[in-house]
Amino acid sequence: MKEKECRFSKRLNAYIDGELKMDEFQKVREHLKSCHLCQIELRELTTLNGFLSSYEEEEVPEYINQRILTTIESTAIHPQRVWFTRRVVNFSIAASVLISFAAGVFMSNQAFAQNNDSDLEFGQETLFSMYYEGE
Image (cartoon, rainbow, N blue to C red; front, top):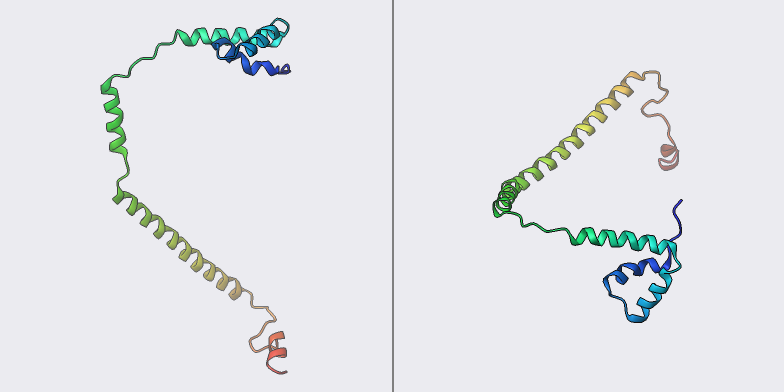
């Protein structure tokens, strides 16, 4: 289980870097004498800062930058390709809708054609005919 975090732990990085005002600096220093959690965190931050200070940033050679830029330019999507892709997608959606509609009509015709024992006949009285046609 993780131990509770001390309210002073947020100021430790500024304490190490010397970014605190003198009165805040003194408060953190006094707190560090008695707080085990902050002592551990201060050691970790000091170790990390030591590691980061030894880090050297290297310059990327110009030919690598050029290769990256050339690759990006060659893979960029051209406006004609975008237009064509949109057309294909729109056509595909429209074709899917039409095929789905036709399949639904065909399947419903097949389902009703196979159901010959239905009691429904054309011309039979319906609620509509009883109320709206005057019967």
